[in-house]
Image (tube, rainbow, N blue to C red; front, side):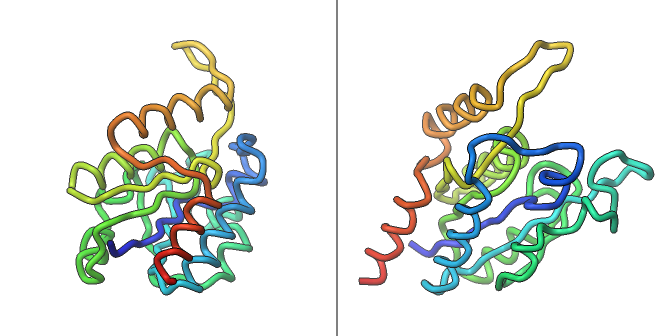
Length: 186
């Protein structure tokens, strides 16, 4: 198994912008732990950054403070920075070429939001034949209401994790993932 860690959209929009991630608590700290563990174990890390394509977008506006990576993500080592404009990190990007160049067969999903870019990227990876690990406490979301109804952050997060575990991903906690890495190194 040759893994790559995907750190998806850990940008200021989810902290100081219009989409403050609220669940689960500690998700950012767990993302940072995964990045540190990946570096220590020699696992390539791709940081994915979302950019709105629509001029004047209220969220992820290119070069706005909210578009920028969270400062803790920005200072950590990474192997590649990939910009995307749609929820799936494979769509219109060089992610798949980078994974192929590095002989990766397993991707580990961390970042934001659980039900949007993390879920879409995990499904895309599965459809392309990758093994997928989805970190339940290193992904996160917030509550939503729209014309279809409303859902709490906890309900939304749990529903995606259950669906991912049903077919697409091995869902695990950050501590389990790091233990696996340390076992692989031993």
